[in-house]
Length: 123
Image 1 (spheres, rainbow, N blue to C red):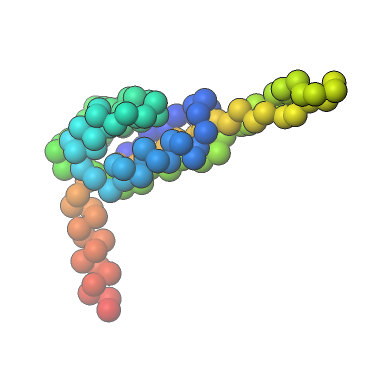
Image 2: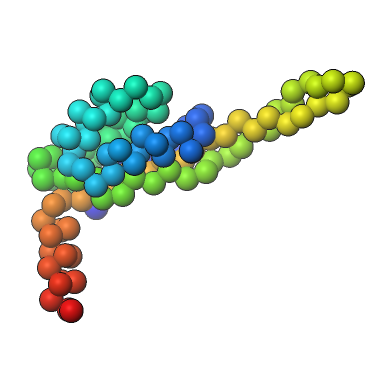
């Protein structure tokens, strides 16, 4: 399993998860084409992260890129920056500027098929 991660990305996890759910479980080529044509701000960062994970698989693990698929695409809550907004009568209200920790896990398709075969044999 090959991983790549992005820490403290300055966009809320809720918005990033919308884009991550589009490509979870897809093959690498299909995921790249989906992210290139998605009109969300997070798609550019997720595309760069996916390309980084593919480069890790190719250079560090000598795997064929055509056999890889996205096994897991996790978007977790990062550090929240707390800011204040002036309000009426000298008071203030808090603004939360949220960040995300994004992790992608790639796996070869053969591994996934073997795991499915083992589960079906046990039943």
